[in-house]
Amino acid sequence: MKNKIVIAITGASGSIYAKLLLNKLQQLDNQIDEVAIVMSDNAKEVWKFELGDEDYNSLPYNIYAKNNFMAPFASGSAKFNIMVIVPCSMGTLGRIAAGTSDDLITRAADVILKERRKLILVARDTPLNLIHIRNMQTVTEAGGIICPAVPSFYSKPTTIEDVALTVVNRIIDLMGLENESYRWNG
Image (cartoon, rainbow, N blue to C red; front, side, top):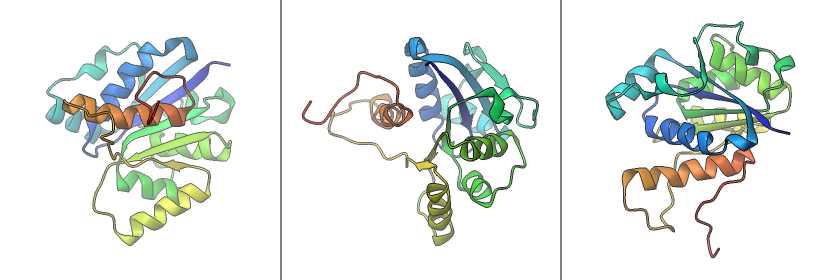
């Protein structure tokens, strides 16, 4: 079965993770039936500031407005089986933990959780306070996966993109997709 994937991008710093993940998903298209994107307004601003472009507009995927509750993945019947929020702001994480579906990102996350499908939140903020940690606990207990954007250095990355790819490759592993990447003692 091919995967139907939602990629949500919030306004936390770390647009590079979203960009590299979307680029990698294009390379893994033989495992994917559909990719849908939803971005917060802040995500678009942060992307432009951090990356100096608006390349998200040229991706071969449908981008849905943040308040488009008619998007297919706003319902479990559309059978999207994976959702990744990358980067995931603590505000978005808190709304998901509280069950507040006030935009398409939080509605889709709620749908993924209620359908017992795979939700991966790539938390980017630091440091964490106790509210953040408890929200992470709540989402984890509800079936979500918290994947902090913490790079590894075993592969001896030499560029910022290489460092960010260590996180992206971990995300792809968590998604259950086959991907060539550095493996410890591999």
